[in-house]
Image (cartoon, rainbow, N blue to C red; front, side):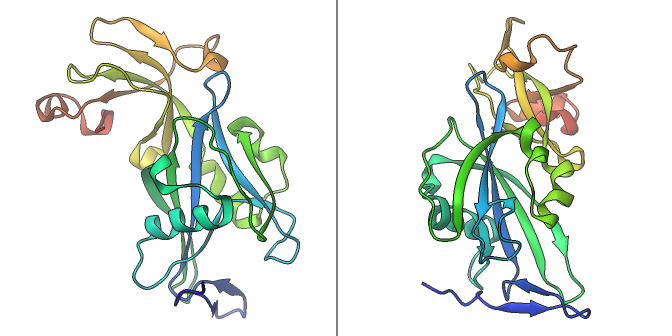
Length: 227
């Protein structure tokens, strides 16, 4: 079904972008076999814009939708991903035009690599290790935004109200996004949850995971992530 966002927007140089109200795509992460971060990529059909390249499931935002709502809907239409199987962690405006058009990348994660069902806009859907993304022929806009979207390894210190947390994406604000590779529990026991990082030097970024406001006030807001 066509929404009211479908249509081209033209920039002053004559270039065009899809989505009368802008567009959004879903960057969905899930742990791979060893716990490392993988992302769901779409091999775009040959007839589409920059067909044959790899990018994110996504499309036009309808007038009544938020970018997150549009991105999750498009992932359902193009990849068969159910919205209830993922959790949105943050979003970034990753492209803007002088016409007012913008593209928002919505970042989410799932507990495991989900099964996918491609529609006619995809020749393939694939879970790709983050370290391997740049080895693929990427859509030019996605290639430009990818360095700011890929995750950095993070050690999570769990607050007293949290028993355990699976590998997951953490929104680090201006510092981008993190992927939890190790968890420190309240009794200071550390568990590695990403075996691919086990032999690496100490992780440089630490966040406190808690829903307890008193704990959040006791640490720097930049280091506190709410569940």
